[in-house]
Image 1 (cartoon, rainbow, N blue to C red):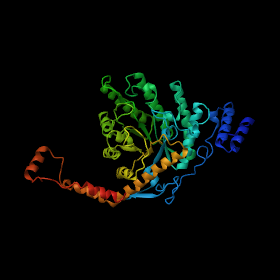
Image 2: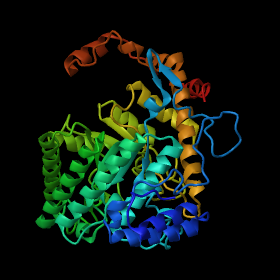
Image 3: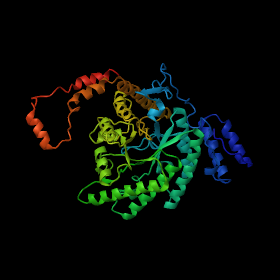
Image 4: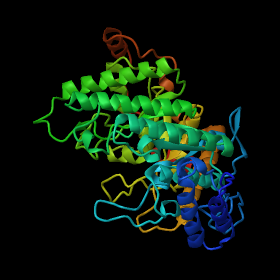
Length: 488
């Protein structure tokens, strides 16, 4: 039921009353459309309406609660937001360790389409005829209702997810500014926060050859303007981070590509972005999200190691961290655990897009991670570095094409949140127990009194004077697996 500003116009008052009294969703929608049409002549449909009632989009869904004994699928059995979890002396509420976030693009804009088929989903926030801006504001109200009922504090967006592109750059900026104003009001009203924002520099045909790596200088400049606008929006919404995913920053063929030129452009672009962050006083983290390919044949931020080297080559250490997406990790031939550990040991792990892929499928399927054993392995690295700081666990994951009910959105997130909650508790138990770490440390005990930073001349002399064993101790991987499995 839509709650709108009071109006002295009888038509507006009638439509409001009609919407309030109708019981079926389709009839309420009809009344709402009448209300929009009538109000557009008064103050503009985009400006009249507030954020709707508490059950505007998910009327059959109650707020999801923690009930470990429940057999109902719309309940948490492991995620208890306020439960205290201690890692040694560091005790925090479960929600503060995990810092879950809902992805606007998959949850609200996901329509089930794929390269072989048209959309399969018909969401209530997509029903009816209205302007692009009115639709954008309806979608915003939908995600905040979803966050409330799921009990999640954070959300994430691409600029084009939340605001339509205009005919000109100026109109595009005006659209984004207007939507950000509403998002700010909704955040305050619903007590929610923005985990991160980003600029979508891959969908429009202008980015066919890349954005920062485009051979067209006009596209390069346009992309910079889009990043500036998106970063401004993120700052205004007090976002914790700003992400760069270079889906088109790469090549399809080396025959027509100058990779040195493109990498130099990319380095300059990122340097300018870091400078702009300081210029506007944005205190969030800047994050780069690696991916090896798709849509391009090869992307320049292939994996964590490649991205770390890129940062060093362009003197950007300390200015960027890394957002690891698990499905991207497996596409690059690594495990997500490997990518998290590689980023963490370099002080670069800032955020995780928590999802997974299908081992039988060779593309980015963006499925919800629901394996508690895998979750435990990931949380070990996150807890060992003391958490994710300003980052969190963003569900960059989507429903399967065949899942078309709004309830499925809740089932998916609940299963992912429960899995990560189990992973958190199990990883904390492993660290607190200490047996696995003690076992790993014991394998390197010969270096406790040995300086491995000596030169080769000194090391050669030591080797000549000592008995070199014919073989070394067993790695006992199987023992490590048992020590791990005792808690999973």
